[in-house]
Length: 115
Image 1 (cartoon, helix red, strand yellow):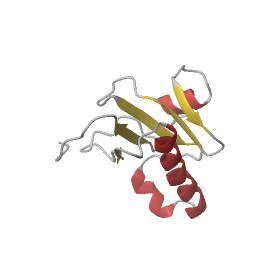
Image 2: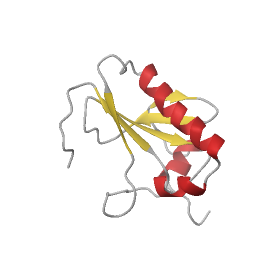
Image 3: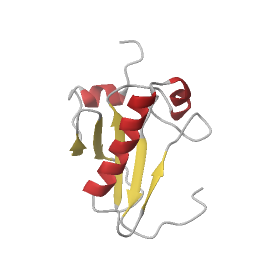
Image 4: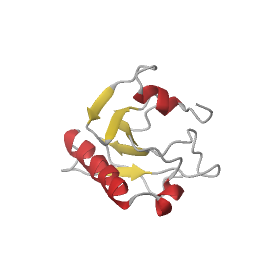
């Protein structure tokens, strides 16, 4: 596939990852360069390149992805103290993989502004 990304390969189990959650709509795994005690990436199984593509995406699939992100945070036990969800979109935001993904960060008090 011409636009094959690291995340496509992770979903196909061609590249190992530390899975933390999976259902029929999302796959979540530990970030290899964590920026907080808990740093997990959540990718939808229905592929889009970035958050910007969601304006034209199937609303039901988008909703299932967002619900999946929420379920992952719950699964990780982050709801009581809080967490941050980050979507990096485009070059200036340092999106490094052209596959929509959410970063869930938690496990400590986070700072603002982030960067």
